[in-house]
Length: 574
Image (tube, rainbow, N blue to C red; front, side, top):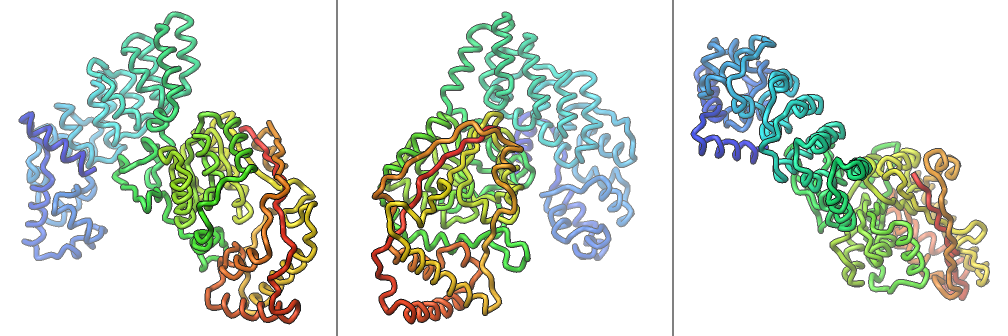
C-alpha cells in the first residue's frame, strides 16, 4: 500500500497535478489536538480508536474513514471544509469528500484522477457507488487498473463492461488480472473475440484463465481467432514450468487473494511473506497446542530434529526408483502437492523425475532435511518449493494442483475428513490423489522371508512398558487414528482409476532392533510428541531397567530383523 501511494505521489507531481496530502492533513489534526490540550490516547478514546491509529493519522501514514472525520469535526468544533482543506485537496477531491460526509448518493465527479487519489481512503462500498457513474459513461482500462485494488468484484465487472481498451497492453493486463474473478476474465476474453482487443493478449490472459482453452480452440475452428492463437496456447502449455511461475498457486493468508508465482514476496494487500531457510511461511499456527483438548498437530519440530540425525546421503533404493517412475507416469509435467511431506521421501522421488513439487508441512525442521537431500542428490532445486502450511486450511488456490500426496499424515490428525476435503478442493478436475499403503496381510514388521517373531515380541514389550509408565504420570501420547472407513470416504469424493503393486526386493529395508530402540530413546515417534524431555528420560530409564530384567543386559542384540512390506499405490481422480 505504501509503495502504491509513493508511486501515485511521484506520478501526479511529475504531471503537475495536485493531489490530497495526508501529511499536511495529519499535521493539522495534530495541531488541533494539541491546542485542545489532549493526548493521543484521549483523542483515541473519544473516537473509539487505538492510540496507534491516531499516531498514523498525524504522521500521514493513514487517513480516517468519513465517519471518523465527522466525529473529529464535532470534537474540535471546526467545519468539515476547514478540516479537509488542511490536506490541500483539489476542488474535485474536496467535493467528493464533502458529499460523502453529507451522506449524498449523488456525488459529482470532476475528474477520474480525483477518485484514484482518494481510493485508498474510501470504503469499497462508497467507492463502488462513485465508480458506478463511470460504468455508465465508460472508463479507460488504465484507470480500472488503478482502482481495481480497492473495488469489489462486482464493481470491477461493471467497469469492464463499458470500459475503453484503447491503451491496453500486456503490462497493464498483467497488473489487472490479479484483481479479476472468473467472470471478469471471461469479459476480457469476450472483448478479444469481438475484435476490440488484440488476440496476442491471450498470451498474458491464458495462464490465469485456462478455462478458456476449449473456447480458444472453438474460436479458431470457427474462424474467430487465427490459427496462431491455438499454436501460442500450445506453446505455453508445453512450457509448463514457465507457466507455473505465472499461474497463481498460493493464496494470501490475510486477504485470500491468489498470489503470483511460487516465490511470493508481497501481496497487493500489503502482507509481506517470510522465508525461513528458503521455506515459505504461510501459517503461524503452532506445531502443537498443548493447552487445547483438541491436539490437531503432532510435535514434529522435535521429531524433525530426530530425523535430522538420519544419514541424508543414503542412495535411493530400487523400490524408490520404481515408485518415482510410477509417479512420473501419473503426474507427467504437472505440479505435485506433497502434503505433510515430513522429511520429503516422496518429494525427493518426484524431483528425480523433474516433477515440480510444493512440499507442505507444519514443521520447518522436517523440511530442512529435504534441502539437504536435494543438495546431496544434485536434484533440480528450482522445482522444489517448501512451504510451512496448515493442512486444515491449505493455502493453495482452488483447482490448481495436478496431483496430491498425503502419506503418513492423515492418521495423525483429529479431523482427516476435513483435510481430504481440502485436498479435493485444491486438485484440478481430473487431478490425482495418490495414496501408498502396505499390502494387506504383510505388515512391515512381518515380512514372509524373515523369522522376526523375536523382534516383534521384544518391540511390543518395550513399547508397552514405556507407555504404561508414561500413563502413570497422567500423560498420554498423541495416538490418533481414523474413525471412518477410509476407502468409503474417498469414494464419495474421488473415483479410483488405478492400483499398482510395487514389489520390494527381498533384501531391502531390513533393520535391526537397535533402530527401534534408538528411535524410542530419541523421542522419534509421534506418540511421544506431547511428552516432556524430563519425564521421557525418567520413563525411558525405567523401561530400560525392565527390559534388562526380562531379556538381559544385551536385550537389543538380537538377530531378528523387520522388513518393509510391498507397497500398493492407489490413484484416485477428482
